[in-house]
Length: 90
Image: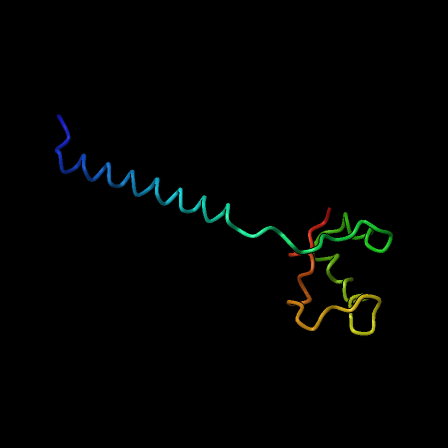
């Protein structure tokens, strides 16, 4: 049984639409900006947090990163409770 011309035409259109959608998604991903967020430093102050689970390590960030601490965060800094969501460990 041969496919009808209408069904074959619809199949070709769907395949072309799928390929165009995939190409658009890939183009969008390739055009994404580079990651600019600083990584968690590998120094004496941060070494204990490298192997700790993220949620546990994030509890200690505000000890130093607070307005009166060693390295205060800027006023426009995003939420302070998810540090390792953006600042990846190396």
